[in-house]
Length: 120
Ligand SMILES: [Zn+2]
Image 1 (spheres, rainbow, N blue to C red):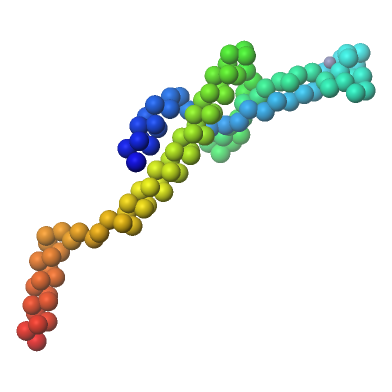
Image 2: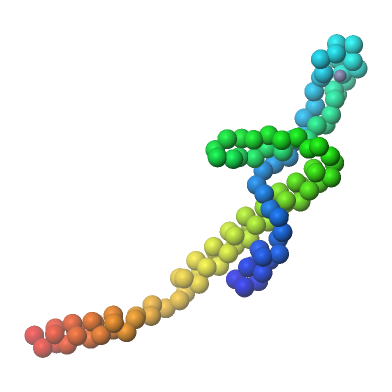
C-alpha cells in the first residue's frame, strides 16, 4: 500500500503551494462603466498568492494559459499533501504493528545480565 502511494507521489508532476483568487475592482476613470451603481466592476482578475520565506507573495498571470498551469501545479501540491498524510498514517501503523526485533548485541547483553541475576 505504501508502495502505491509512493508511486503516485512520483508521478504527480510539478507542484507548488499557493492559491488563486479572483478579484474585481474599479479603475481610476470616474466615467468608466465600473463606477456606475450596480456595475460588477472590472475583472475578474486572477492572482496567485503563496508564501516565500515567511512573506506572502502575490503574482498576476500574464496569460490564461499561465493561470491554468498554476492551477494544475496547485492541484498537484494539494494531492501531494493528501498523499503524504496518508503515507505518514500508513507508516505509523506499520511502526505500531512491527514487533521489536532486538539486535544481536542487545540479546547478548540481556543474556549476560539475566545469567548474572540467576547466579545471585
Ligand atoms: Zn473602469
